Length: 115
Image (cartoon, rainbow, N blue to C red; front, side, top):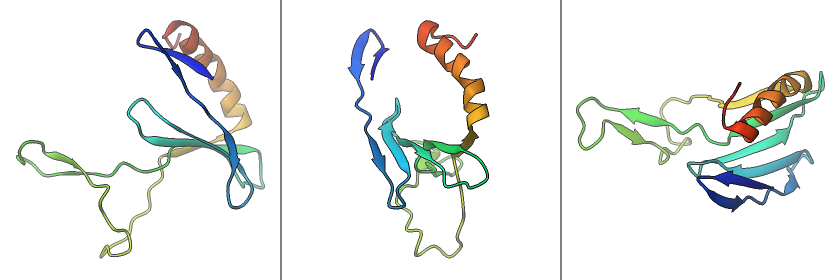
């Protein structure tokens, strides 16, 4: 797949792989270098995919901290935390929802606009 970005042609190689449970998955990085994926869901109720960032991108805010009040907290060891949290930032989309999004995404590919 090739995309046009900032007047430079960027080649993005996206290979379909399998998860440990044999579901198809495609891993890629977004504009910020964040690891993302599209993965076939294990849902038995209907065909779905998981789509989005692989990690939650946890940030900590401390008012008046210099040089920035916001700090990435990717260093947190989830096994030694006093409290545990669950977070998900991937969308669970049905085929019908994806079909509704496709024209919007195609318009963006062609024009850079959503409508």
